[in-house]
Image 1: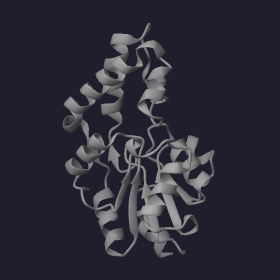
Image 2: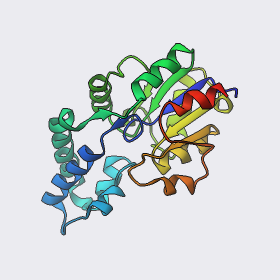
Image 3: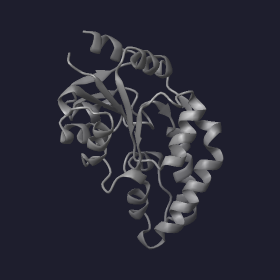
Length: 212
């Protein structure tokens, strides 16, 4: 397979931030929402940009909600966040094999850097495209295209890996191959419905797929 560039989503794909995100939403919604939100409802907020999700709850107080969420998220970050099994070894192996690696995320750069440093992934990726760097977030192709430009990559020789529909759609919209991960907090089926080119049961499946 002629893949030489691999782009990864961060949260829910490389590092497990799900419980931190859920806790931060729960904390924020408890202060600003007009009713309680179930865990299942909160899961729907994971993936899109934070402001977009919170605007559905209380559009008038979005700025306050974003500030409350980020304060809780940063304060509790290190207590919750870990890399998924096999992630660190796999991405370092791929880097050693000469693949160009990048991250495309809807997070702000500050918390991205916190997560990479905490999980031992700091310095592994040649480019990191965050919400701060683009006008349009995933599923718009802009973040993927921006990462490819930074890596001198072409869409036809690139793979976008993610745990959310936004990741698969962004890759398809940019013209890359796509891979979903079965450990998606929203369940495998939502990704299967989008027909990604590959489905990873564990991160080191990538090594076999690319080697084949």
